[in-house]
Length: 181
Image (cartoon, rainbow, N blue to C red; front, side):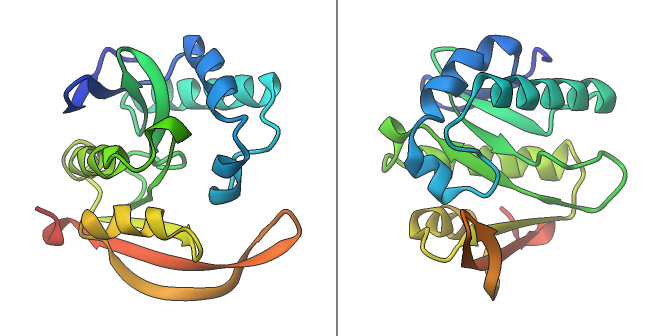
């Protein structure tokens, strides 16, 4: 984990993930509603899942030398994540953004602010020219987070994802660096 700390709002900031975040991951990701709204978070979420994800993120940051995925923190404790997990610095002009937030924090505009903060970081520090995002069509709240941050709906992808044995439609969003303010 780097020492990077980016303020989002009063008492909320972004910083790198660390092994010390494992208990918070295990606590927050036991909520099935989070699993249901994200593509890659398993349910039930196990210690092995947390160890794997944390190891992957820490190794990725060490290799790149820059964070591309952040813990959203309140008073130092992880309450969510925002970032571009698979982004490789200097290898591409675009990154796919993903995020989740602990359920007690839903409906407070916090994720909108965290995404706005990450978008600014991605365009300046990661030097991406385009951010993209996939959102399950039923996840209206997540779509609104993107729209409030200037992302444009670029298409509807019918039966695009298979999750828990069900084919799910998705909305595809994009944001160009020149469109963001």
